Image (cartoon, rainbow, N blue to C red; front, side):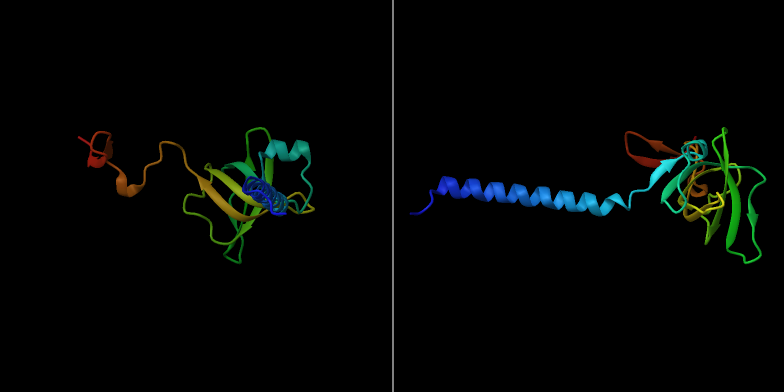
Length: 150
């Protein structure tokens, strides 16, 4: 006894839906351990982030806290949200915009001593930032072009 075409389509749609749900669950399971949660220094201190857990630490680089170590590639600095300060360390090439008093999002984990060991630094700039190449230029909304300011 052959199945009706209507039943074949229904079974095919249900099988496709089950495969889609299974793929989504597998992807969510794989990404669960890769998710890096965002913390401010005060969040990290009050919530007690466990050492080794991958997170993102965001705040401002404390003025006067940036020190380069003798190896030439490691820097130590403090990150604050004006409520708490967290010591941090990064080994590698820091972004051009990374400096004291600027915003930073550091990806990494805390070590057992409480120092945040960054594996990646993302320097942030304020909304008034203008690249040197574009200083003195304005954006014309009508023509969608950059022009020299008058």
